[in-house]
Image (cartoon, rainbow, N blue to C red; front, side):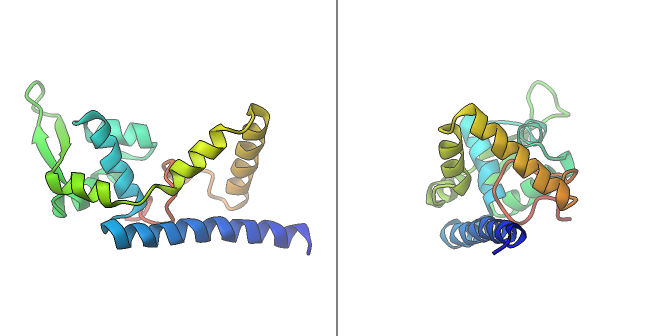
Length: 157
């Protein structure tokens, strides 16, 4: 087998792993990996703003607004106006949001992060460089994307 085929097989395995995780997540909690990550960010602080989530996840304000709209429609988050700045919106989890988060299986990305961070610095650098190069080969290096392993939703209108 040549290197081109080996690289395509490795890419397909990565895509398949994220796809299967997404299905497990949807089945267990009725959410996408990105939606779970938004809930996790809110849960970490108890209250946050859409701007803070967008900055933390490295995505646009419009992307986060669409995600929050869906989560609010599901009754998982609550929007409230800030007491100190009426232009600012605060987000908190509802009881249903907390329950949905507790039903979610361990995130694929959490497993990845744990194993990646255990690697020596030189190996981490090689992996990052290789992944960035693959992204460029696929003309995907400028896409709006967060550090969430999910094949869907981010960047979709």
